[in-house]
Image 1 (cartoon, rainbow, N blue to C red):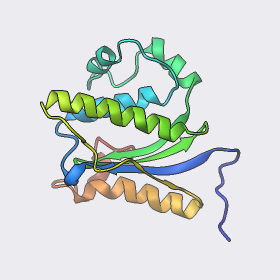
Image 2: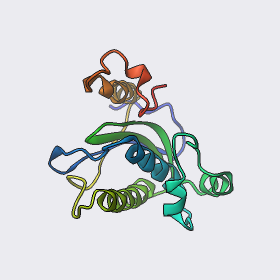
Image 3: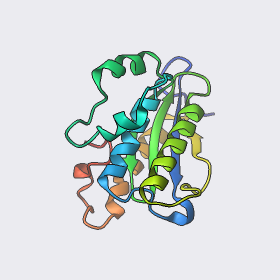
Length: 175
């Protein structure tokens, strides 16, 4: 018998991940990682964002926040909650709490489409960026959640120069 999560209510927690096509890098520089994070933060709400590309371009290391006028709308209409993340050169991991039915699928579709279009435009390429549709696994026990969180946050250890420094890796929620 599986033990229930300590989290109550109808919320469902998922491990969501994807990798670049042919295991190629999907994040070339910090601007790519910032764009992905901005999109993830913005798309967690079920709102239409006017001038999304303009907003995303202003999202840099000096303004790692969503502008106040849209933040409230996003937070009020969230369909997912971001629990943790790690962005690696050729893949990403997320732990998401689905707040509304179909929320994870909706966010991941918007995120994948938006990021792929931006990446392809920037690097003058076309075609698929991700190797497949995103993968999602239900987190059904506390033990799985704890192991998964450790796994996600230790991912940076495999990168050159980050072994035993994963607590300093800027592209995960470990800090």
